[in-house]
Image (cartoon, rainbow, N blue to C red):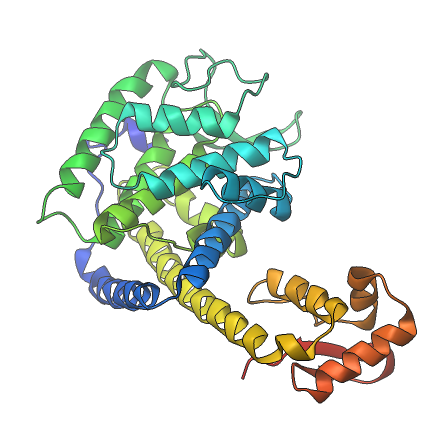
Length: 366
């Protein structure tokens, strides 16, 4: 069975536009909500949102590839690349690399897509890795570029990309098509455009490593260019939570130019990512109001712990904040933990559920 790129009609993808009319309408409605909300955020909240989403996306897009990064280190590196004050903590090369790339996607969203765009992103992402033969350029190795799982003795090939000798020509086609669509007022709908661009890039798989992260960065660039503003989207966050579905949807296109199944998954994920961003904006606004309301009523330990709880984001601590969590974060005694937590409940900063060892505490943001 031939791979999709071996079809004589590639890259003329087939899809039913009528399936995505409502998705596109919801996408633009959500975009309007996000832009309107951002325009009314105070400067501090806007900066916090920018840092939070860029950190979240850098960590999530890496997690999808099985690369686990330290959130605090990534955030410190992102602050540095944005020219903001940092805590000067030591940051690993991979954490610095993904952070630099995410900031570049954010700051230079309006630049025309080119080979150099991809090469620069790849250089940032690989950040001096010694195990990659070609950094900052397309792959040149003679052996097949395959996505494989299973044991070494019985590997299963899920996909084989075009040979290296075809990559440059295919990337010329992709970049020309992309720029034609971006700068054409009558281009295909944004959701379909972003979904095709991501798939198109992943089909070519032009680099030795980093193709998934680069392909997801391309989605952010498209949305930002269509919005004419940095998207501040939570796409990688949603894909991380639906990783298996994501890969299954991509695989439906391995042998077929009909990409309806992929685009339906992509459209749902993109709308979910917008909803998550809206929730995150509201969460950060609530955080600001929370500390304005309770800051003078809390001691230094309580403030430290609740700041740490907010750092967990919308989901918070899995299962809620426990007394042991509080003790670890604050470094205080069990008796002081009990007193501190009860005070926070008394002033309605927290509410509690359960009894004894099952007692858990949650932020009261109502």
